[in-house]
Image 1 (spheres, rainbow, N blue to C red):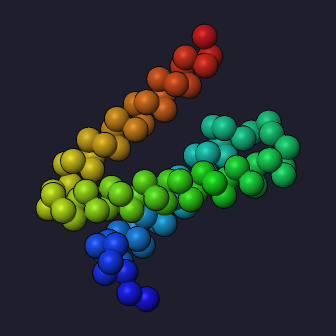
Image 2 (cartoon, rainbow, N blue to C red):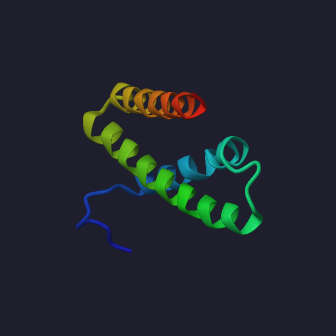
Image 3 (cartoon, one colour):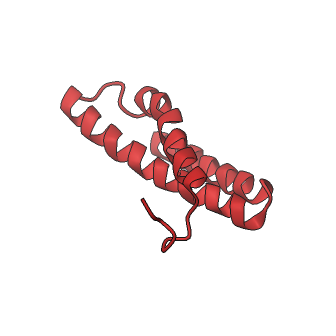
Length: 91
């Protein structure tokens, strides 16, 4: 499979899918604890795909910047936005 037209490394794609599946238990615990089974599985698939895409982007940021710091900062802001949105929903 030739992905040279995308200028994305195989390592970024592989780590992106690992990133998506790593966050799988978090989504089950935080978001879908009281939902119906059908909704949970369809939403979890979308959740894992979105996080896999974000993982590919973070991998490419790391590869192109040759530093882990920019990806760490983006990850921090993503988690912060999630926590803020969860707190605001509770109010």
